[in-house]
Image 1 (cartoon, rainbow, N blue to C red):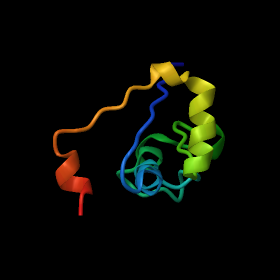
Image 2 (image 1 turned 90 degrees about the horizontal axis):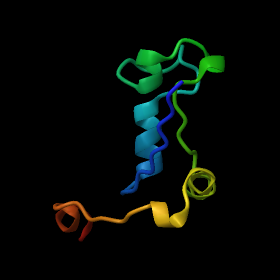
Image 3 (image 1 turned 180 degrees about the vertical axis):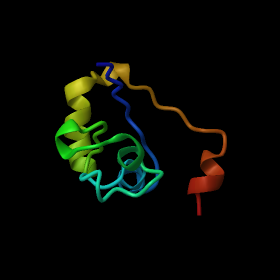
Length: 83
């Protein structure tokens, strides 16, 4: 099966990504979420999302070396994140 590890960053990224992924139990996941639309059973998990920044840092290191990650600023970064 194909696997696509991805690292996201941004304001409230853990909370936002978990909202997009949906509840762990697909029966409880809302339509429009990854699990709500594509998963059928907890044992057949179609997606994983870290539950905290600390967990994400550990999990990222399982898949990527630091030199494989790039840092970039989106064109609207300053407008979105500066007070």
